[in-house]
Image 1 (cartoon, rainbow, N blue to C red):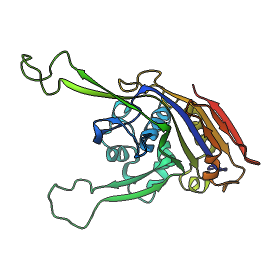
Image 2 (cartoon, helix red, strand yellow; image 1 turned 180 degrees about the horizontal axis):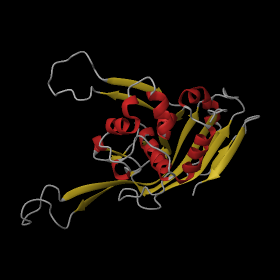
Image 3 (cartoon, rainbow, N blue to C red; image 1 turned 30 degrees about the horizontal axis):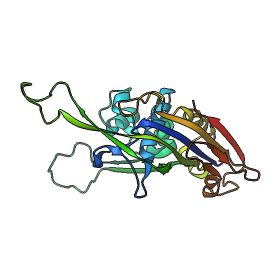
Image 4 (tube, rainbow, N blue to C red; image 1 turned 45 degrees about the vertical axis):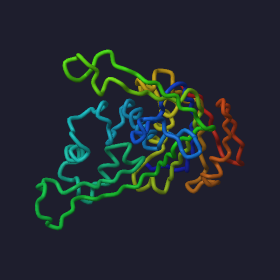
Length: 280
């Protein structure tokens, strides 16, 4: 199968309605915001959701979340060892890993792993282990809200203490939940044909990502993100007519205008095909 033939840019407009789209563990799990007060969903969070949706479609995924793991691997190193066998760490690692896992050939992967079996505290024999970098052709930016967000915090309590004999409240009885009441976010991404040649990322792989973007938050509900609280409004998909593209990704992304209520308009660019897809 040939690699991606044409440069692709995309944008995703989404709405948050009484949910915590991406909590910050260093800030009491409050929704992430930047210094201007704009809500943020990190690229790592978005790629996690993309991996989950692609895995649900039956694609091989290397970086699987623990609650969606479909093999017996105990770590990424263990998964690589069990899947690639003795060829893991050889000159064939990049080819085999990209052929096996869609997220590796799409987003890339750094196999930076310690020497297997080295005793803790043992003498350094000069072998630092394995380090193989794969640069992927698909980039996803962090999502930011159109306007500054207001974070609502609510104190919660457990009806039963998790500590002691139950005669008094434990330290884990009280807690806080945080949410963004209502906001519209947008994020952008691109697919680079030159880098796709190195990983084997194909037009079919690009179509798989295009297919899952409108349902990015399907099967992703939790107490922080109840069903229906996270919604993709629009996916904008630009397909260039060459590998280099007629326009820079920056200019393409600037052609999108998103209003605070989610209404989206796209300024036409000459000879550039654009497809606007409604979210599920």
